[in-house]
Amino acid sequence: MKDGNCIFCKIANGEIPSATVYEDDDFRVILDLGPASRGHALILPKNHFKDICEADEVTAGKLFPLAAKIGAAMKKGLGADGFNVVQNNGSCAGQTVFHLHVHVIPRYEGGPVMVSWDPGKAESEELAKTADAIKAAL
Ligand code: 5GP
Ligand code: ZN
Image 1 (cartoon, helix red, strand yellow):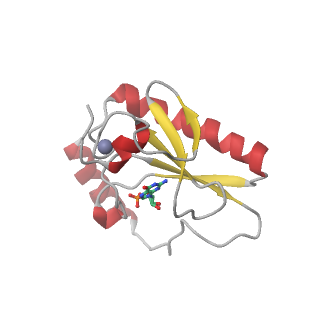
Image 2: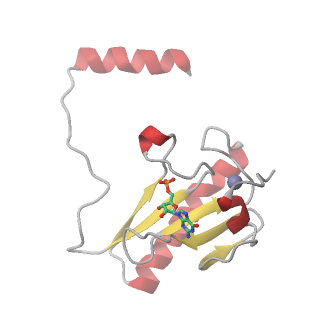
Image 3: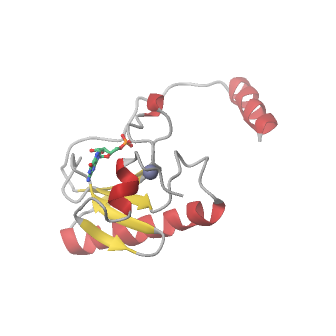
């Protein structure tokens, strides 16, 4: 399933060239054109899914092992000290390209702060209510 109007479908399937670091039957891993750090990579499924909720379980199940493989290679090959695995769903969550992708962002000691938030505060009663609302929708 490809979407003819989707740029990541075209990149993932090799119709548009990219700096590719890994490819197999299901995925292409490319370097991000607007990197948050040196080596910032995107894991693109070759099939089109809008987001993680649309992906089948087999595809979704391969994403974390692949992210780990790419992250480990960033540590070994680029000297990264760690890495973030980030995946945005929905424009309010920062998704700008509506073809499922996983960011693997190498992190270097002393590098800029990113992928962070100001922790809020929650009472245990409120947490229990929120948990119930999610549980009821599963
Ligand atoms: P999102 O905000 O949807 O999670 O991430 C989209 C990412 O794709 C951004 O980090 C952006 O820099 C990257 N990007 C957008 N268009 C292209 C492109 O044509 N080629 C590459 N390599 N990266 C792209
Ligand atoms: Zn697509």
